[in-house]
Length: 389
Ligand code: PMP
Image (tube, rainbow, N blue to C red; front, side, top):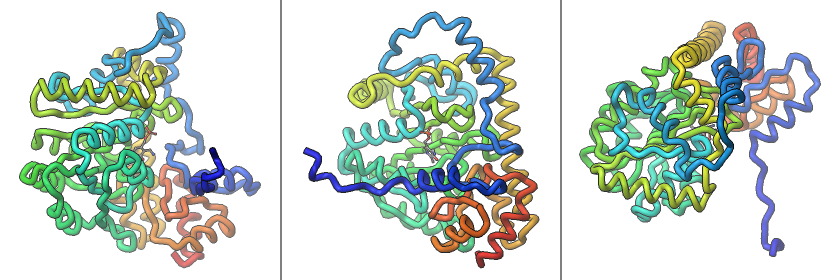
């Protein structure tokens, strides 16, 4: 059976994690893996999450199975946070709990491939390295266009629009809702409106990936793009992750919402999602969603969570400002959003950063800004200078 298998390359980020772990230098800096870190370098469990977990230990009545669609109270409690007050009417926008945002992307891909197998998936590059393989795994054709110029750290909006004008009705446009991974370059309000108008005029279906809400500007501002496009198109998919903004990474907590143009179609969408979920993972894991539910059902916990999200965002912006003020050539970093920035560096420079300076970034040049301490910004800048970046 297995003789035909070829060895597959390991995930480059996992290699970075292993190399960082083995590095004995006490001043090493990990800007590789994409998790938020506080100023002390840790990824602690949020206060609101700890409180919710204590609440669950005391009050959770059962570990009996969830339904295939997960906990509808969880997906409903997220609606006002994502779509705004009274937004995302459940009868037109069914939601289903998924194993993380990654699970939501895969499930959305399955739905598209079932509804319209010849749809092309338009993807701006660079993007999160998992996007392309997820959509290829469900046999969708992926069309790439250039989204960002890394040497100038600019978003190539005109190129993006020119590419999307080539898309056919029924094609799908993958859009990062906020905090673009890996560049930190987000569309502004007018640009979101232009993309929305193009999708609406040409019958393109937006698939918004919102994995970092609250870690850019704020919970509200980071949903602006999604809400702008949501109200202008009849059909849309949204993959949502709670793994970053609730700090639940390993609990695999997310949801997929799909806007349909009628209640009848929405029911069809929901039943198709249930079938795909059933054959993929049967039912989603509960704990992360139960924690989110416990937080959002208790106003004092929700307020504390909102304060913690705001603190995370503030720290990321402070690190960005510190890098920009230490190096005028990196000033663009202060105007980017979220965890990541993609430096225009070669593989050799990435290696030199690691071996000579103990600074770990992804081989692609992606840097987790949220992994840096404000006080280490000058050291990063000096190291980049030394490697000729
Ligand atoms: N989309 C993007 C852009 C991401 O960066 C990530 C996580 N790195 C995900 C989706 C998946 O999130 P999750 O960990 O919840 O599966």
